Structures are given as C-alpha cells and as structure tokens.
Image 1 (cartoon, rainbow, N blue to C red):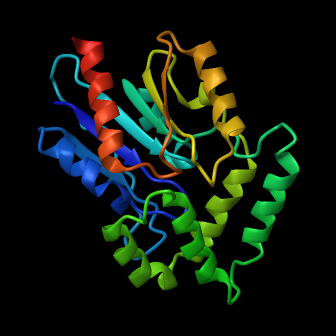
Image 2: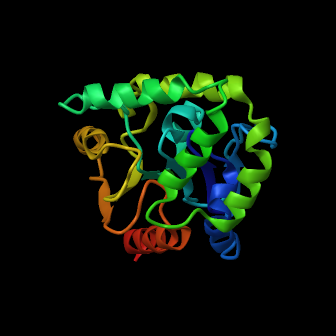
Length: 237
C-alpha cells in the first residue's frame, strides 16, 4: 500500500494538489492532505497509515514553506520526499538578503489593511506565473480569501524569517526528489540551492535535482506527476 501525504505552503490550500492527487489515486495510491485552514477549510494534520505491506512507499510532497509546516515525524518517517521549491531558509545569505527582507516587510505591513486582499491575489498570480492561476484554485480562492484565518496566516508568515535545517527533519535514509523552478518569482534561487547543497551532504542516496525551465513557484501538476512517476519507476526498475 503506497501512500502520500501532502503539505501546501503559505497562503495556499490543499486544493492546490487536486490534479496531482487524482492521478495518483487512480493508480491506487492512498493520498492524504495536510491542510493549514487559512481559508474556509478546517485545519487538519494527517499521519501515516500503518499496514503490513512489504516495503511500502511513504511519500511526503512539500511545497515551499511546507517543510516548515508539516509535522516533523511525518517528514522523518517518509521513505520518499518530493521538495517543490522548498528551502531551509527563505532569506538568502548573499547580497539578496536585504532586498528579500524588505519585500517581506512590505507584505507584512499590509496585513489588516485595505491592501490585504489585493496582496493575497497578487501573491497567487506571482506564485503560478508563468502559468495562469489554476482554475479550480482560483475559483475557491476568490470566494474564500476574505474569510482568511488571518492570525494563523500571520504566524506562519513569520516562519519565512527563520531557518529549519533539513538535517533536523529529514532522515538521511530518505530518497529525495527536488523540483526547482527557474522562473520562480517568490523564492530566490540561492535559497533553494543552499538547501540542496546541505541535502547532498547528509543523505545516503544523493538527491535527484530537476530544474523546471518554464515553470514558476507553483509548477503545473501534470509536470510534477510526470517527474515523480519517472523518478519512482527508475528507482524500482
């Protein structure tokens, strides 16, 4: 019994995964979503289902801040981990540090102001760029963004200022696939790269890193599925 637990990132929802989820479920995978509950959904945190199958795959799929939001035991017990534009530290240590902090401060100052909703919509557009905002997610988002759980959203936003070492949350035995978008308007490439460097030092199996040349912070679900599917079958051929 192969299973997946997903964790979306900041200002997003588990609806982000709908197409990807459908592709795995129709192939008899068990899929569970962690949900922060920023919008109308209730917050929920899942866990691995115990079973007696021989060598089942337990795959965690995390997007962006998701590695900071998911319960550490879920990530640590995963046999396979897919990191999509993820990071240990969102704020880079190079000459981009000051501009990144300024950008975060500008966003933070818009919480609880008349510009708040506009900021959320702009963040959504920039996250999906260069693709259009996913239709199902966009409909849901526009209906629900005004009843956002703003306190939780603000608290999670502060995690962008902190560092969370992969060595503290990921087992060195886990197999890891890193998907890194080259047209990401949200995450600095150097922030993603520094986490990859540390993963390569700590993991027994060298992580596979794939650069998505024509994708942004939220890659197309079908592209994500194709790369995960190729990765899994290559490991078990």
